[in-house]
Amino acid sequence: MEHKVTCVLVMVLMLAVSTLAEDQADTCTMTLRERVNCGYSGITAEECTSRGCCFNDRTMGYPWCFHPLAIENPEEEECSF
Image (cartoon, rainbow, N blue to C red; front, side):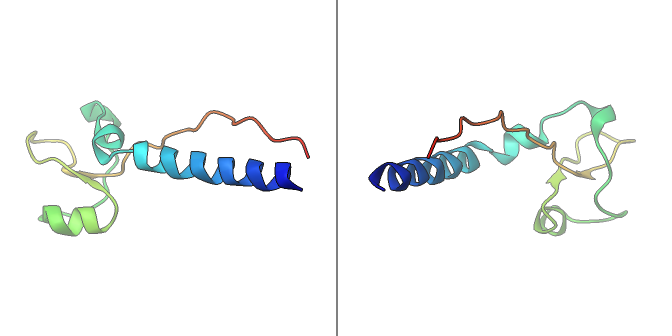
């Protein structure tokens, strides 16, 4: 029984640490052509980020408010019960 509890606690800890590691800076760093519009003309940075999107208004002709990159987590080892 203790092995199962330990395994579950380790998995929860790994999930918490991996979630913290996913910085917005990491998920918002992409090429201009990868940006997929997430807003509308005139959206503010605050409105954009409140939607869970990235905001960068430095380049004309590309979306300023865009969806973050999806981070794929490698398969984690499963505990054997």
